Length: 161
Image 1 (cartoon, rainbow, N blue to C red):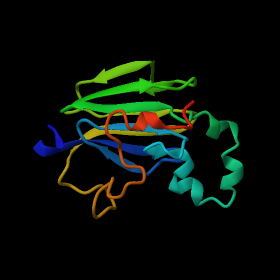
Image 2 (tube, helix red, strand yellow):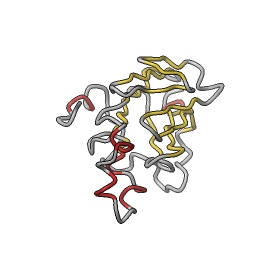
Image 3 (spheres, one colour):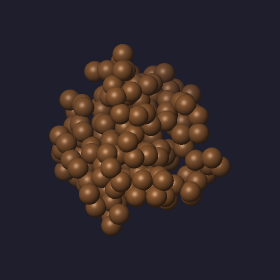
Image 4 (tube, one colour):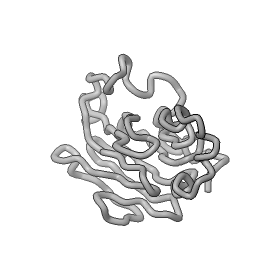
């Protein structure tokens, strides 16, 4: 189920500042979700946020700050095996349940909902790697900014909480 076998993990924003954004995570890669500009999915770099004329005021609000700089780590450990780790002081929710760390083994059969902060929600699923992401010609990660990082690389964030 690795990308070589045609499958990647898809992390799709459902609502919040990251609603509509999507990242694909290959086997062996790690994706950090948070408000740090260095996070692979960053609320601070979110297209919805930057489209607002008042975005500079929004980043100081309590709702925005419920997402930690490095809130959640998502690791595509082995084909179809994904580990989610809460790195925050505000909590990470998987399918409505507060978690510290969780291993997903059933993504081939069903999707899961990840929740962070007051409003950010994501759908986790598997997809064929040869199918482009929604609305993208080259798929996500076609550029260095925000791409999922290999294990260990994401941990070098100087803005880490």
